[in-house]
Image (tube, rainbow, N blue to C red; front, top):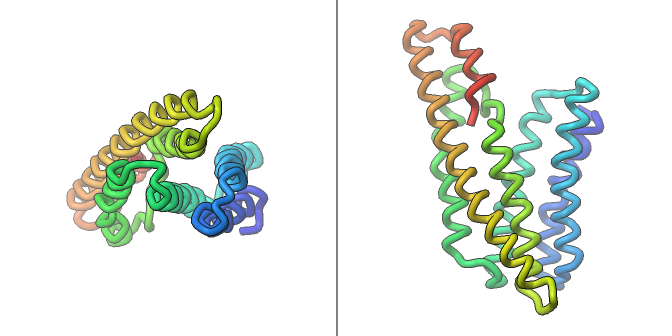
Length: 202
């Protein structure tokens, strides 16, 4: 539990309410952007350290994507309420997570736990969105950096949303294969299904 990668993930989780307060309370945008940047760096660092130090754990596999999703939702809420991003961008990202709400109960019924390993497409989509938000934040201000930040921010936002949805589709395909393997095995997990978890995740 108390490994450095897991502590980094927990600290990233604690940053979510701090970010929302900075955005919606005092509107301390510089500090809010700094929190987002630190969250992105810790996301990269905890995964790298977990693999390098052989500290990959079950709770770490749950905390890492949970922190990513909460940051995405918190940032979408804050930027939408501030009028920095349009509502349809927030709706497109939130709709993807709503689209996958049926999957955790199915995985628990099949005996695979609440989640499957995150696919690299999902990690790329999440990373693109986390890069997009600070840039879009900067684009909402006056200054020489606003226009370059707007161009880069929207590029990351569009690609990130597309990859985020693509990962969701891959996740559905994986779960359908697990359901088929479960049915073929007469209600028992087979080695083939376990192998698919490691290679085709969403």
